[in-house]
Amino acid sequence: MLKDIIKHKSPVHTRDISLSTIPYKDESVIVHGELKDLRHVPIVDILGRPKAPGTIHHITVDLLIEPDPLRIIQAEAEMITTPVEQCPETLDVMEKLIGLEIRPGFSQNVRTLVGGANGCAHLCTLVKAMGTEIVHGWLTRKRNTSPIQNIALADQKNFLMDSCRLWRKNGPKYKEISEAINQQIR
Image (cartoon, rainbow, N blue to C red; front, side, top):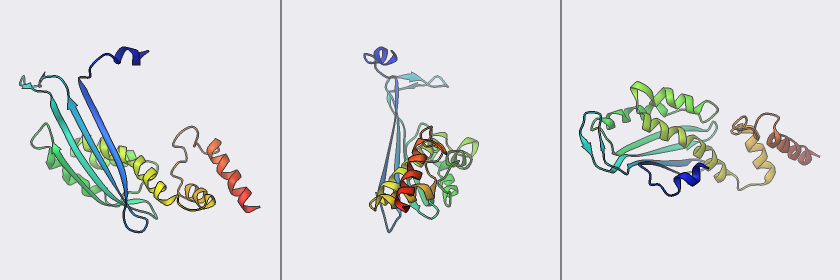
C-alpha cells in the first residue's frame, strides 16, 4: 500500500489548509481560511537561483456570509508570505466575490472570478475549499432547533443535493429526509 511506502519518508513539500466558522450577528457567520505551503528541501528556482526550505505561501481569507440566499457579503484576504513580490497585487479580485451565492457551481464561479490569468491560483484554491466550510459551518450554527426544522432547512437550501452519491437526488439521504417529513406530517 502507498501509505506503507510513505510512512518512513520525509515530505519535500506540504500544503495545509485550515478552515473555521465563527458566529457573527443573527444568522451571519464569518468563515476564516488559511493556506500554507512549506518547502522542506532546498531547490533551484526556474532562473537557477538557490532557494532554502521554508514557507512559500501563507494566505488568509475572511468571508462574511449572510443567509437567504446564503452568500458572501464581505471578502478580505492577506498574503503574508509569497514567492513573488507582486503576488499581493492580485488581492483586488476579492471584491468580485461579493454577492456570490453558495450553491451548486460555487467552485466554478470562484475559478472564473479569482483564478486564472487575472487572479491567483493559490487564492482560488483556498476560496474554493472554503465553500464546503461555509455550508457546514452555517448549518452547524443553525442546527440548534428541532429535527423537523433541521430537515426542512436541509431540504429548502438544497446544499447537499447531488454533492455526493449518498446525497444524490432520490438517493438514500434524500429518501431518509422524505420519510422523516412524512412521519412529521402524520
